[in-house]
Amino acid sequence: MSVVTYEKHGAVGVVTLAKPPHNLIDEAFLDALLSAYREAITSGSRSILLRSAMRHFCAGADVNTFTSGGGRRRDQKDFEQLIDGLENVPLPVVAAVHGAALGGGFELALTCDVIIAASTASFGMAEASLGLLPLLGGVQRVVQRAGLARAKEMAMFARRHDPAALERWGIINLVVPENELPTASMSWARQLAAGPTVALRGIKTLANLSARHGISGADAQQLDANDQMWASKDQKRGLAAFLATGPGSAVFEGN
Image 1 (cartoon, rainbow, N blue to C red):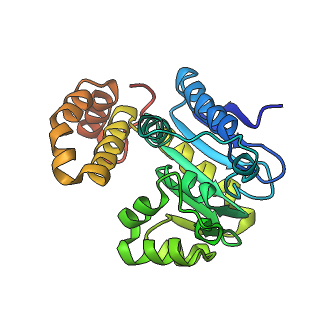
Image 2 (cartoon, rainbow, N blue to C red):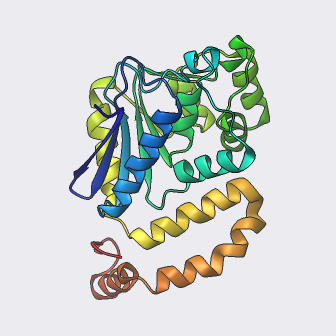
Image 3 (cartoon, rainbow, N blue to C red):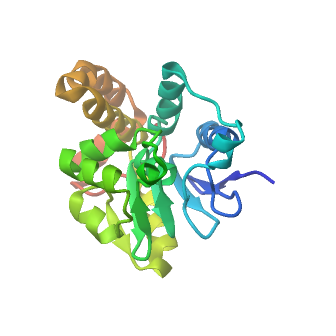
């Protein structure tokens, strides 16, 4: 049985973390996740919903791989390729988080474009309690979203935080009652899937470039993103609908 599954619901590619008991991360788990993302692209999905079938979203890394020698030290190139595959998949990705998103699980959520959390969820960078530091870029991504002080607080104290606090800090997008999480997260994923694919991909690219390289890094790719958008079918259809009947009437079904 796969530790990560993929299925297509309309235009939404649903990627489900399914490694008993708590989706603990190892190399095989990450490889399966990247493979599911690639399948979403090749099967024609227009957005991705990342969710968990277990009690928790993801409770962090499998520490047994450290103590048994089964873990592999990533070099810089490996790390950058992994993060690129998770963070820059050319589709909008919505994370639906319930239970705990700790350590690497929190970092996986941070690679998504949108995070929707159940009000009963908990988040944290717990690595410091084990004498470690976050291994998948969590510190720098919390710095980017919430600032230096919050990132140091979260990583150094290694405490769990409720989603309402993280929503206030700008780390996650929306908190909903736990029983509403499946509906709310799928609704957001479907709205993104119904949007202008090329324009959304350009927005994601520019936002991620700005987060990594500042405004100048995004500005360097702005015209290329513009050209791709102007050449898309979505742009032509949307503009024609706007001119014909006014704003709010465009329907996007292609590229």
